[in-house]
Image (cartoon, rainbow, N blue to C red; front, side, top):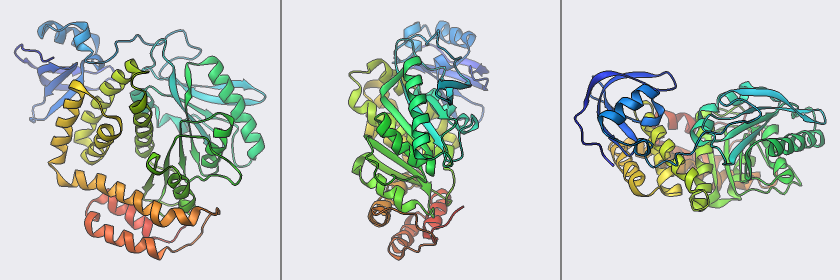
Length: 412
């Protein structure tokens, strides 16, 4: 639905997040207002993300109903009466048996709807700072975040598993978390514990960072989004774990060694896993699917100016893996067409796919038998990566990753 009234003259428009922009409101279409700034750029913002006064002005001027202002979202009410406040990290929460965790409940949680969860285990023990960088993505996709405090390399597998079991059971007993959509993540030994956790409670997805499947562990998951540095000494182990899942596995490398992946890589991984699940479950989760489509389109539109290459890549993931329909599909197609007009946006996405293929072809076979590889030179992958540099080396974000992959495996 497109509003037909004349534009609203330039004024300040304020989002609930506090961000404000001066612009002319051109129209409202499918629940989103098109705002033209003085520099000529147009930003598209979901009406429901604006403060109430601005929402009411748009609805009155463009003569749209409350439902139309929500676009094709579900209109479901926000969840209430939960054990912890929405929109902030709470804890440590006592899970019993000496186990505690921190938890983040997004303000986007809906009443009567169970949410996916990302459960974090860190090699050095858990603290709230490790999940704060992911809260924006939790809000976008409606995920609960939690992190075990006691799980660490020093504690050992048995104690870690006991702590994680206590935390997971406590969360499932007390919070609206969907047991079919547990996702595990962590760094290094914490990434390995993420795979161990799938034996405690089956996962839908695992997102290990510089992690590996420990010997003897029979992981139970549907998808894997592997994170890691291009010259990390665990890169072969992560690659092997990813390769086991074929099209349901993806290896996203960063321009570093054995260290933490950027939060935007983690956010992209959450988006990828969310698309994978809802692509097959739209019928059972129609309300959530509608809300996700609106949120994803708003996210991509916001990203378009700040990081068009990343926006294009995630837009293709959204289209090819999830596949929205109707007006949302049309909006996505237009966004992709606009972004594709810059060739490097397309090349950036192609490069990520090529890097994933190098991982599967040259890294994964070396990780099959286990064990970290220190100061290892991979001449076969180096030749393939050098060739990729000829096509993609002019893109800074890609060039840095390729340069890292050419190095001998190391720590930081």
